[in-house]
Amino acid sequence: MAQPHDPPHFVVQLHDATTLHFDLRLEIDGVLRSWAVPKGPSLDPAVRRLAVPVADHDLEAAEFEGVHEGSRGTGAKIIWDEGTVEILRDDPTHLSFKLDGQKLQGGFALTRTGDDSWILIKMRDEFARRGSDIVGAQPNSVRSGRTWQDVARDE
Ligand code: MN
Image (cartoon, rainbow, N blue to C red; front, top):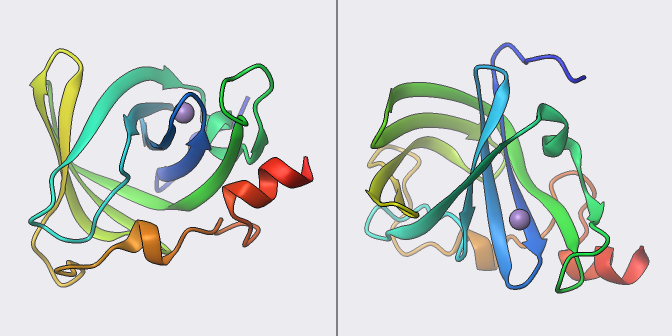
């Protein structure tokens, strides 16, 4: 079993399953709280991104880059970003946190808007970038430099 990290870790994986999506996972109390974010995170505070809550994952899930067998799509998954997370507030309907990753930095907030929907936004701080498209501009794995298409082809 993977041990909890101090400070805790976060990961954002890009996953080609039934549809291409990003998996946002935050280490909280020894597990990875997880959301599927279809369009991925944004550094622009004006952009609201749907985040669908999914089951907590074991800490090992943050280490996976490769091809998930038996999933739809190619199953390819890359570690799109990773680093440390500081939880600022953790309420049933609101979570705010500070990331220190390679692509994502500064404050973010998740707000529950329904049974299966939360909204992910970038908080306004020195790391906010109006009009930026971090997902389009930096599609590669921070571990290997590969794209998800490279992983799908190579494995
Ligand atoms: Mn996924």
